[in-house]
Length: 79
Picture 1 (tube, rainbow, N blue to C red):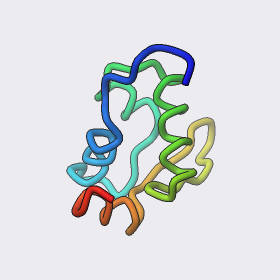
Picture 2 (picture 1 turned 60 degrees about the vertical axis):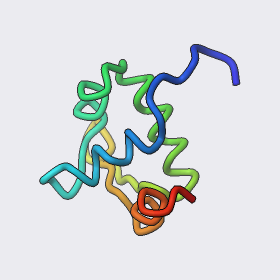
Picture 3 (picture 1 turned 45 degrees about the vertical axis):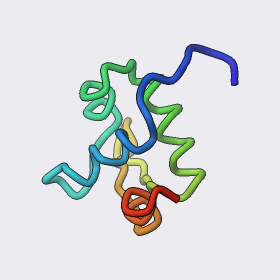
Picture 4 (picture 1 turned 120 degrees about the horizontal axis):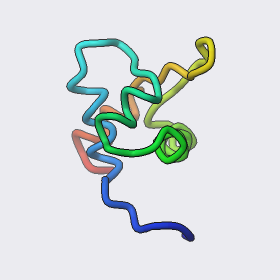
């Protein structure tokens, strides 16, 4: 994969959702917590969505993201 080396694992990103008191997060919240740009965060989030670990719905200018059952299972089993 081209671009800079990933310094935050998928597991770390998914744990943000698991530990959040909110049922969903928006891109800039995730970017701020990870120290990413919105563009960088959005790329990772779309990748996690393609794998089925999170889902999203457009809410205004920013998607709202939430953890799926598959994402919870990934965090529990690592698979």
